[in-house]
Every structure is written in C-alpha cells, then in structure tokens.
Image (cartoon, rainbow, N blue to C red):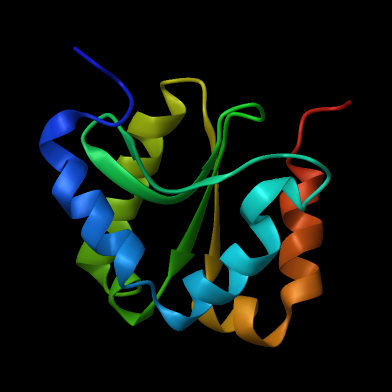
Length: 119
C-alpha cells in the first residue's frame, strides 16, 4: 500500500490547497520554492491516511498548524495518535498554533530550521 499521496485523497488534498487558512497561506509564502535554507516543502501532502499541512521529504519533516478545534480533548487525542502513526514512518512532526505563525513568524521559522537534519 502506498504511504504517500494515496490517489483516493487527491480531490481532498486539492480542495485543501485551494482553501488554506490564513496561517497556512502566510507560512507557505516562506516555505515554498525552497526559500527556507533550500529545503522544499509540499503543502497538503498525503502521508498514510492523513493529509498534513506541510511536508519536506528531504528533511522527513511535517509541519502542522493547529486552530481552535485541535485543543479540545478529542482533538488532542486524535492529533497525538496521528502524530504517532506518522512518526512510525520515520518522519518528524512539529506543531504550531495558527496564532504563533501570524504573530511570531521568526520563532516558527527558527523552530522549523532547528528540526532540519544537520547539513
């Protein structure tokens, strides 16, 4: 079974790419085209049965942005299990709140860089 970009999620991935949150659109402006230390990211990429906000294959790094619905008990449990399954594929997952991206972008970019493999 394919691990990345399963075909049956293609329409959903496209829909998510075409309607990003404000924080996703803002961060994408700094990640796209290898702008962050030459590391290329994909947005709304499929990994297993999940669609992640941003994925850098070279770094094996997922960046997730969390809005309000991620902070209730059910959302926290779901995100924890999802992260565990993605990390079982050898991929590191880091999370930021949407507000962190919008209000403290330099910190977010610094944390992403800190999760890159040593070059």
